[in-house]
Length: 218
Length: 242
Length: 166
Image: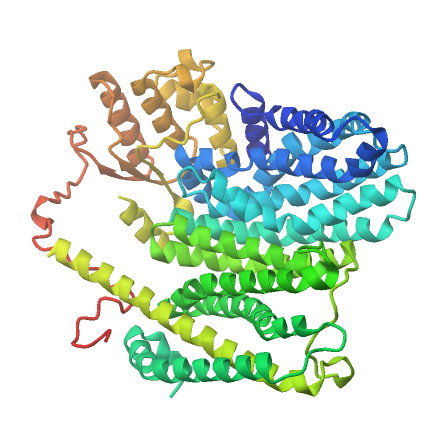
């Protein structure tokens, strides 16, 4: 399993692996939104939590179709399905690899972009905390969408259509944590709910994803 | 005589052919009676004036929008567990109908909201939930369209329907948490305190019955079409190979 | 060929899918990984070693650090076949394993298959050329070619009785 994780990470970091694309997209969002909305610090501070979360979510979406599609095309997925590790574990490991190269990276750069978005000082800790807690759910849910569409040629757009509605609860609670944190209110309730969604998704969705992949490999 | 007999397409086609005219007729009768009664023979509300009458379309379609998804969930589970093709096709047939009911609920809600709240749209939890439900319907239908092999499509959409149901429910609560909202409480409930007045209530019940029957009629027609399409495919492939 | 594999996978009694590996047109190779990395990955997944030996057997030792993207078609094929050696699986199911191999490589591969058989393994090959394996039993499929293909039952949808879908 470590071999699979290190292979996926290596593939992501080598040429054409797409690492950095999501980060660049996230940066673009944080630059373009103020250009569109105007430079007033108060307005930006007000929308910063939502924009940062939506930006992170869309950046995460960009690389989802690579999770299984490449392995499906070159036959690796067939071979992994007959390998001695359970397919559920393969799905979980691949989602973990996706999280390490996108979710974790987004979490780490988010405070820098929050400066551009004029996020109030109280929000920084909660921005990082909510992204760290919430992005794993984004990767696991995304892996489920990728598993459903792995057999569909040029399924990228379909994948977004399937995955974005599933992202709604994560987005709401994640952005709420930052919003409340920035205003100095208590954040425990949305933070716990966010953690609950992540825990539930991580525990259950790999089974659904593995089932979908089995159907697609049939 | 068990319900599983209708899993046989032949049996299903025979029974539905018999039931369809009755359902269609009853549905039309209920809708005509309910809507005319509601629109012309009920008083205007003392607060809301005649705009209140939109509930005869709004409430039943909103109910059926949710019930259609529940029906898809049940038929998806039946397909996954018992592998009855008719069940999968019924789920496929129900989705566009449910989507249409969702759209009707949203549009009539907007027509009602404009004079009442002074706005066509508000990010109220109920409205938002219905918008999200629309997205779930769209995704489900798109997945059916995208996959060629019918059994693969049935399997994958069933899994999506189950996972989607959980997330749709989560979204409902998340949206409640996100904004407390200005939508009035439920129009119907067993707890009489909250109910609308009897004058509005009886025609509304007739309209709801009409919408339920309309939904059944439409789903039966669409399921029959899907079965015929599958039958056509089977015949064509047989001819190609012969 | 996939049909055979699926059937084997379905009939798990005694023979489990875990005793089998197969190679077809898609090799499961990653273009941006080197020959060694590709083999090491599959060896680790199957929990066996022997990457160095496998490379030596398939004459890939000199190419060990070259990326799979820069291999010729024949070299890629050899790498795909070397993968069989690091799975440690007793049953090989191979669909056209010799495509794009030159004569010398075919002989090399025939030797690998023979060793596999000698060590108690089994191989099922679909091929158009003679690998020169004296111990092989040939199943010539030509006489079994279906004169009139059968229609696979379609879940009750191909019921032809009168009025079935009135």
